Length: 134
Image (cartoon, rainbow, N blue to C red; front, top):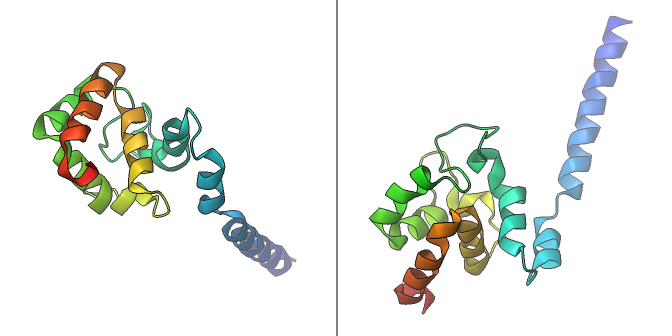
């Protein structure tokens, strides 16, 4: 009886894993939200919030969404560093923040969505001057 229960649990877990991997289609999600007014926020909630939330599920020291103290030091280093870290990854963050299907523009929208409101305009202004996005 013990082994039967154990096998049922293992098989159930395997089936759930396969179902999840078959149903995880980030391209469809990104296509669905493309061009919406809150595209950046939706990307953040889907791909970034586990590490960047105010109370993250995975606390790796990532800058928290909307927290001035967390972003101020990073912004002082320059927009180039933020973009490079987003594209290439840094510390525990994977390249592209784990959103390998996101375009560079979508990653920028996600960054803007995570910034405190008072930093957004200056970030977008600096972005216009940044060579990669001209």
